[in-house]
Amino acid sequence: MSNTIQGSALDQLFNEARTHNEWSEKPVDEQSVRGLYDLLKWGPTSANCCPARFVWVRSAEGKAKLSAFAMDSNRPKILAAPITVIIAYDLAFPETLPKLNPARGGMMRQMFLQPGIAEVTAMRNGSLQGAYLIIAARALGLDCGPMSGFDNAGVDQAFFSGTRIQSNFICSIGYGKADTPYQRNPRLTFEEAGQFA
Amino acid sequence: MSNTIQGSALDQLFNEARTHNEWSEKPVDEQSVRGLYDLLKWGPTSANCCPARFVWVRSAEGKAKLSAFAMDSNRPKILAAPITVIIAYDLAFPETLPKLNPARGGMMRQMFLQPGIAEVTAMRNGSLQGAYLIIAARALGLDCGPMSGFDNAGVDQAFFSGTRIQSNFICSIGYGKADTPYQRNPRLTFEEAGQFA
Image 1 (tube, each protein chain N blue to C red):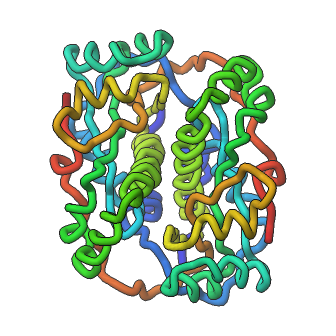
Image 2 (spheres, each protein chain N blue to C red):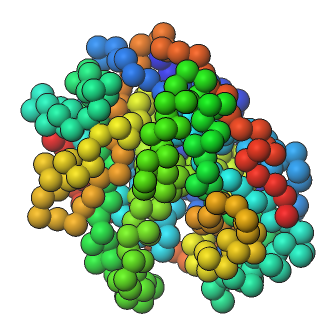
């Protein structure tokens, strides 16, 4: 049985973590990105289907290509961040199940190939994996700036042409400037967000 | 700037965390559930829209009602767990935006009310919040057993009738028995799951 992790870690992951839109000059090296993937990949998905796919946009060319599809307010954030990752999901993920789930993969592959099932499974579990990315990045001392204000179809055409991969959201990663741009917004109370049953 | 959290915490959250399906007798008290919500609520969502809604099923009556809609293999897990939480999302979430986002809530409310936008926003961000729940629970020393094998429409009828709330997935919470039921499944390599650009 586990104990609660250190209070400073709870603060870093949740209580005091903030979305960042402005970035220090400190780069994010390839080793950090690979370390981030090797952490987030352990987050649970349905039948271990792991539908998320990640494009780690770091080159000037890649940033220009991605930012062209972003809302005006998001464009400078992408250009300024060391890396902006496209969190996507592959609708062809059932093909990976025999490898990812040796015990039940063949059966699960058939189930996920039923009409409509792959789509909702990919969106749900690909989004879970996007959240694992955010929390894992924070755990490694990185800051995140997740965004969904962009043209998904345009990004899919530019980055995933000829595949069944679809973009979900994007997230800048780096070391944020200390000053956050606005006051933290409130959250729903426990009762506003739910109930016991 | 933050550092990497302790290695033992990385292990507890990701590297050594496992999905649990069998539960010790130790209960999960109300204070723990409220503490869990007060941690997960800080996870970021688009425009702070916070669409997730949570039903914390802990009564015998609630467990019977929920388990009736579960796949055969999931039914005993729900009945045995101290709590199984229904992670849902409210398609009426735009109405909360003026409160949740004082600076831009009125404008964002209009945007999210456009046809089709609320649905994808609720599913994406409600799923993110479900992942925050899983990781926050682990951070507090709890174990999780997330499941999507159930009749969503039936659960919606039984728990959310007369609202625009829709179930997404469910997750048992408690203190797992030490023996996990099967070998850990493999994950995609960095290259299989993505690329630099």
